[in-house]
Length: 335
Ligand code: AMP
Ligand code: MG
Image (tube, rainbow, N blue to C red; front, side):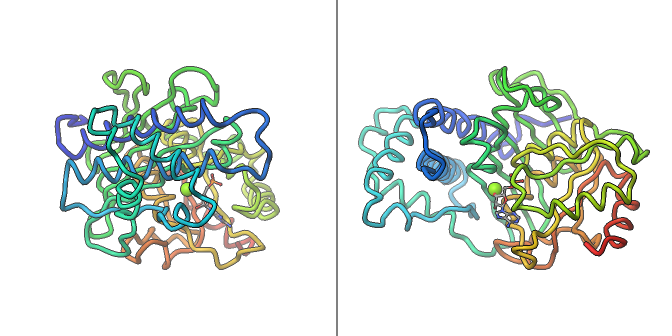
């Protein structure tokens, strides 16, 4: 069972939920249909505000805990970024919602953001304030991803997925899902607007590759589309891959609504090293639902090497049953 009274688990759930409320507010107010493709300011504001909020809540709940997170305040302190910093501060103030928040300075917000600059530690929390930034701008899938890692082992992983309904469909209606995994306690999902009715998630039992459902990044530059085609052919997978942004993909696999997830190395960046905040929460969500995750060579993900998965190459995630045949197919196509 999920021990929701445990302080760290409760913190993860409440924090992810408050962070999602904040980023949804930014999206509702700043992402407009007239936004040009180049204008990424809403996602910038949501990213920074979310990181500041989570860093502050962590400091308040567990002052000794360290944070490894994507953003640093330097981009907000550059000339020309004044308006962004002002908006970030305004959204954080609103998220805090107390009288004290009125007095919150931009300087304090930047200090909170920079609590995320930890490089390496034996125990830390890791945050992707908005995973799937393009999905966020498109009104598609994105996630707030938070995880607790101790001695390289992910202990808690939480994904706030505002546009994922029951973690098993891609409908863009409803209240979205909060998915939490705790080592030894399974993976659980609840509706973001009522975090009481927890349903346990379990991966699929599909072992026939012909009917397997393969997930990949929406952004073709984050993977290798041609090689994914070759892989599908080798495996005999018939359906086209499902394109989805963010770690919502892990939640879909955990819920048994997908069977394989591939992150191949793009031709443009063959030496790309995955960031730990892009996989820490999702990897436990999948593992505790009975799935398997490794790199493309079958190696376990190594979360002890700093901010990136320096000792790994790409990602293969699966329902477990399809993992061994997928590793063979990857070798055969030279991925
Ligand atoms: P996805 O939504 O699955 O495309 O994953 C989003 C994540 O991809 C972002 O959080 C980035 O950290 C990461 N990313 C950025 N560039 C690349 C790249 N060239 N290859 C793989 N991942 C990338
Ligand atoms: Mg990310």
